[in-house]
Length: 269
Image (cartoon, rainbow, N blue to C red; front, side, top):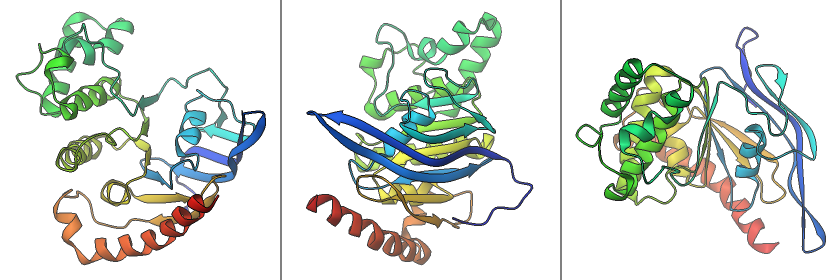
């Protein structure tokens, strides 16, 4: 794991994390002895082959799943199953928009629940719509939007509450390549403004390299931390131009070799 200056604030700390499931009468170990930390303002990608426990770890941090063993701390305090941490936001794999609400009403939903006055709510929603490049679509319903646009709405619905820590579970996995690159640009632009601490689950190495400061590579099941790669590409980043650089190609090759070993292991089990 990369060395950390002593004065850097740790936002997420995971130690000896384990998760067992019972499947068809037998115990399946999904995650075993996983340990890592994420510091304030870091964008960390959790990468690994299918079934290695990436989303399971994310959901344990989000308190949606209870660990079998080990500890998870957010800002130094242990998390408890079923008790969400107030300043942590979650963006799911699929957009979870309400089909009966317009774009502006979907984005403003959390503010409405929090009792934010309608005038302030409208101002913040209008700003969010502009930041996401959705001008002109405020009164559209989800059924009228493309997949990429729905994901923008879903993202802004989470970000509008100003979470300090953002958990993202393959939010762009179902999008085509060009739409995914567009969403990378949108997310990078939004993140540069606020610099939330991000834990981002992905199976796409190119996505991880484009977005993250670090890539934590998990082994094939049971998921353990195999390697922790530093992604030192300068910021701000151009999601398209970055992929044409020598530095990108070199790091891609290095991580891909290690990831490929885990793909092979996952096929043999």
